[in-house]
Length: 271
Ligand code: IPD
Image (tube, rainbow, N blue to C red; front, top):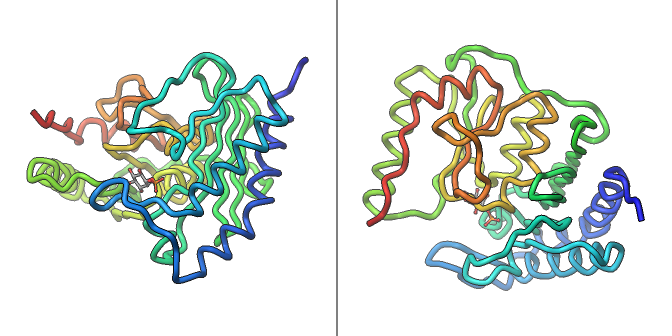
């Protein structure tokens, strides 16, 4: 059976649109069921329900597809293979969702041979739907999008996040990188708390570059295709090839990425 990338995308779009109202209803409620995955890393009953619904819908329709989902992954251990695989973050920006801070999104990607070929990312409060297929371009609510073309850091907004590392070494490392890029007169630095949506913002040119250490494949899978289809680049912070499982990423307009890769230092290993 020959399923086109557009058909896979259509199914992903249907499932996020279908679940959007439930997410919004739960978002507005002050009493959410919260569990702690780490000292400050949260998961809610909504994250779990959304992921279950997406998995059930997509694997019923496409029984040959596999799943790599944030909430179905135990203790950070997963097996990402060459088979067609849905890479799912049911709510990227869970802390924002819990606090009723409006930036968060559902992120669904499809990988084949571990290459991302379909991207569907939906931010329910903003009603922003980002879509892309490999070779087919990137779109925001149906309109074609592209990354920015600014050349200088002094014209650019850089987005990143402080993540969950609260060790002295980890904090020191983050501050060194902030200092390195602020010294170069960057116009603005933003921490929006949702790597996926921040990368989607890169794909439509309202943010010039995003970087973070600590992210997982499900945070960046869909958005990385949005960016490359919108004319941007997704690399390792050193400027080399991006490994989605390396827990780090740098992406954006090629001019700014090139400048940042020279300023950012690598995170020291914890032992
Ligand atoms: C997190 C968010 C956050 C980023 C973390 C991610 P989650 O995803 O994208 O902005 O700093 O690295 O894990 O846990 O809300 O899906």
